[in-house]
Length: 314
Image (cartoon, one colour):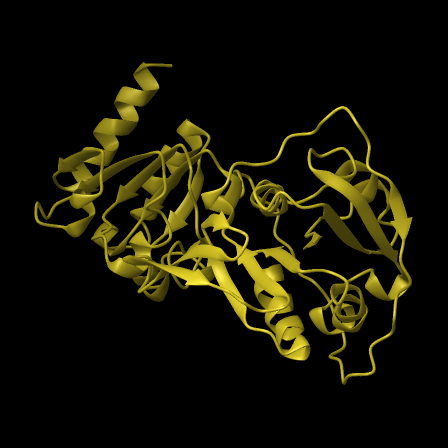
């Protein structure tokens, strides 16, 4: 038995979500082969070959993969996947786009957002927006699953290097979309899903102008900025900042929730944070039920005081 892990990467390094998936893969106690797809992706394959537990790195390098789309990758992976008993991918936009397509073509079920591996055929995944966990037994010939990055520590590099082998790219015969362009933004702050501190705001901040206070707090703490769905829907921040079941799942060392009620949808995306601090004017807000520290009061009064105290500490 062996396992294939589909790597998400930025052409130079593996993504943090892939490192978490490597840790999950190690719990199967089977040989782990990692596949890197891209163009001029030798550096990321070399980097991947040093992680503990990786016994082989497949490198699929082709100019068509310079801006890889799931449709372009599927046919090559479909051929490779038939040699394995387990297919893993991170539960990120990348994995959620690619793995269901692969599972359907293999005629196998997919397990999404796996948070615990009990044994080689028994897994735990959240349901009902994270309010319950289902223990699932899979008897499929090939078990495909996406791994929730916040549920596993990131893998560490070892002292040995796994062999890197090329694998031929098979051009898709399926109808494929055409890549037009990618528009990126330059972040002044840490990326939301990998930040150790997150300051998140909700509808309780009331206005977009009040979010300027949240930004000042984030800058003082070196934190990323997040938002509840209500804040995003109100236009306070773009969708990229949304934390929750329909947004990003995070697990920082410190999560500061400002004016966030604690709706199930939001809690599903941040409840694994190490320390949760909540400030809300409503003493009965559900967020206080999961918060390690809570403060009841008016944010427009408390936030400036908090900023002054942090500034005084240097």
